[in-house]
Image 1 (cartoon, rainbow, N blue to C red):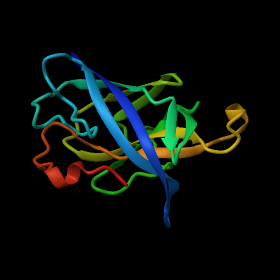
Image 2: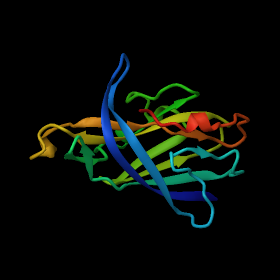
Image 3: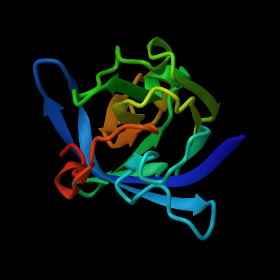
Length: 180
C-alpha cells in the first residue's frame, strides 16, 4: 500500500547564501498540501513526520512548483525544476545540511523522478526508522533572463525535514524554521 501526498510549493524573496560548502539562493517557501483532503500530513514548512502520523507504508510525494516567476528586489526571475531529477531533491540522513552532491539515489530510501519542469515525484520507502533533512532545489534564472535555456541558473533552495516511521526523535517547533 502507498500513501500519496500532493503539495503545491511556492517560493519567494531569494537571498544569496555564500558559504564554505554551498553557494545558492535561500528564501521563503510555503508548502500547501492539496491531497489527501481532510488530514494534514505535511506542514506549511514542508516538514513530514511519518512516525507521529503512524504511517508505515511507502510514501509518494508530488511537489508542484507554483512559482514560475520569483520576485527579488522588484524584479521577476524565471524558476523551475532542473532537467536532472536528483538536482532538485537533496537529502542527508541525520541533522546535517544537504548539498547538491547529497542526491536521493545514494540513500537507498528515496527515488526522485521529474514529471515536468513544475512537478517532482519523490518516493520514500519509509522503512528505515531514520530522520532526514532534505532540500527542494529549483533553478532560478537570475542571469540571461531573455534566454533561460542557455543559462544553468542558480539553485534556489529550502530545507525541510522528513522523519520516517519508528523514529523516536521529536521534531520541535524550533526545527520548523527553513534555511534563510
